[in-house]
Image (cartoon, rainbow, N blue to C red; front, side):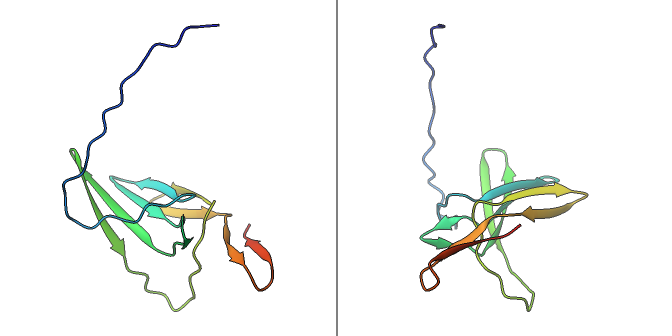
Amino acid sequence: MQKRESFRIDVKIPFDTRWMPAPRECASLVTVGYKMYLMGGLNFDACKEIILAKVNGDSVIWERIPYTSSEAVQGRQCHTSVAFNNKIYTFGGCFMFNKKRQVRECTN
């Protein structure tokens, strides 16, 4: 058995008043070029939004990306996203628990 050395974690408290996305779990974060995209996740309800994060030095600027399609968008959680040829592909995941039908619908 090896002895584990202690370590230190520095936590920075953001004093920036710009908009930030709500905390969430089961989301995906993917990098395309020098930009990061946060998609889906769960925060009381499945998130439908796609958020762009621009990193510049020690600061991060968050922006909502407007969805401009006539198709209905459902919030997705527990999915996987990958970037390939400057496009983002999202696989799997599931939607919110349907109380009426008593099921959680998953995608493939």
